[in-house]
Length: 250
Image 1 (spheres, one colour):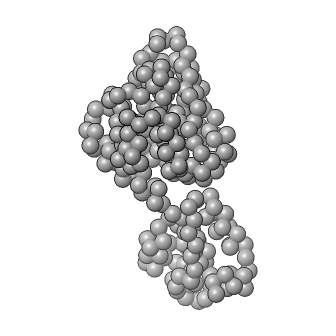
Image 2 (image 1 turned 30 degrees about the vertical axis):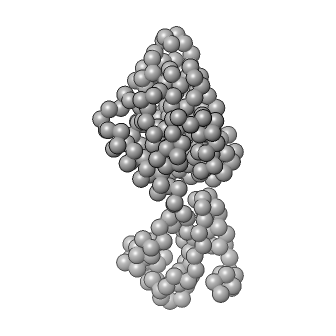
Image 3 (image 1 turned 90 degrees about the vertical axis):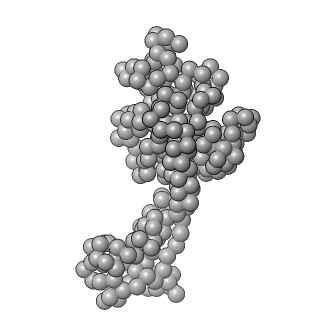
């Protein structure tokens, strides 16, 4: 593929229940020829996925994608089309880049709350071309590129970092809670780490409301799998009367 070739990425792999989106920049030459994500034999992406979900490079490609979807993992690339010589991200012609339609993706997959970037270029392109157009709150995390061109880390080091981050994201939960201050007032909040947040409230490092009235005790909490559902519930409870909150607590 030479500089004059206009390259086009392939469709997103995502179920409506997806929670995590893994983004590359633009598929390499081998992946484009085969129309498969991460097809280069030295790319360690599928080795990493094998350690997490048992989907190694030797498995049937469609089955691998199906298993990732069942585990609420979505795959895509930031770029829909561009001009690039070879496979290196540094050869992407920025003037030619057209990003994918992420607004439509997040509409179809509203539970996605974390985006992992497979390397620096994917994050750079997303922040520059996509993020400013989104209203959806997202957790953005850059991971080491799985490409063989990224040789500053060993395969083992890449696998450790990916496994740590994905395992943590898959286990991540969102809490809505009700506190009582020392003077009996109720405070409703949201957190991803209930123990840490309670410690902050107790030590005067939490919400201004609790700092002012003093931490009393945790009265109630609910756990959600997505940030959007937790924030929606938090807003709902905050709009309730004291009697409604007491009915929920009891």
